[in-house]
Image (tube, rainbow, N blue to C red):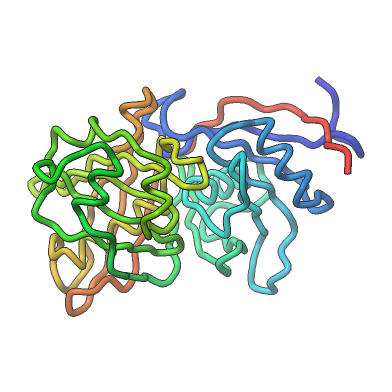
Amino acid sequence: MAAPGPDRLSYEVVDVFAPQPYAGNPLAVVFDADELTTEQCQALAFEFHLSETSFLCAPTAPDADYRVRIFTPFAELPFAGHPSVGAAHTLVRTGRLPAGRVRQECGVGVLDLTVDVAGATLGGGRPTLDPGPDPAALAAALGLSAADLADSPVHVAGCGLPFAYLAVQPGAVDRARPDQGALDLLGVGEGVSVLSWDAGTATAYARVFAGDLRWGEDPATGSAALGAGVWLAAAGLVPADGTAQYTVRQGEQLGRPSVLSCTVTTADGAATAATVAGTVLPIASGTIRVPAR
């Protein structure tokens, strides 16, 4: 294997929110990326062609331990969940940071993560909540009908990145088929989480379709899992005050089963904070050529 140098960078591939290897959401983590231009980062993310790639840099904020730039194959994101969890755990596992609390600088500011041997817990940004598109129109854009809808409102909710949440009957989640043109015309934030909610187990079975993935499906979406807590509070599906635990199952249709363990803290029926946690499993490591400027 070629050694890191002026024309090569070290990287790892890890599976995030993965109950076992080759599950969850794969992530490329590129070390020592400070000198890369935006165009070079984008070229590398397109080469890996995973849903996201994390580029690790020295922090610019005085209260941060590191800075991460997050790219899909097609665009840079200010924040995303699985790239944040995967990057933090990889930094600790490889000895670059000590376990415990780490502070990540990204496009939405400085966020706290807590890292242990198995994985990491991420606290999201400020909760946001806005009206969503007409439920029937959103269902139609996903190849579903009004009869598939559950009795819950559509909101665009976020805790770092906004997503639209469409609650449907349990059997309808796997029948969703996104229509890119129709979704482009609706106000859905970064994407759409189609989910069914099981109150007995406090579990959402979800599929997430992201605009920055050209409306492709994401195996595990930490930012959407955080926003789901904001949506659950707005829909009255968790207690109005206190901290509730919930689980998001995702990626099963893609053969990448994922488990995202979450909390949402509420006051007077509104979310005030959320967290998402999951395991991170190392899969591969190597070096990659630096693209030409």
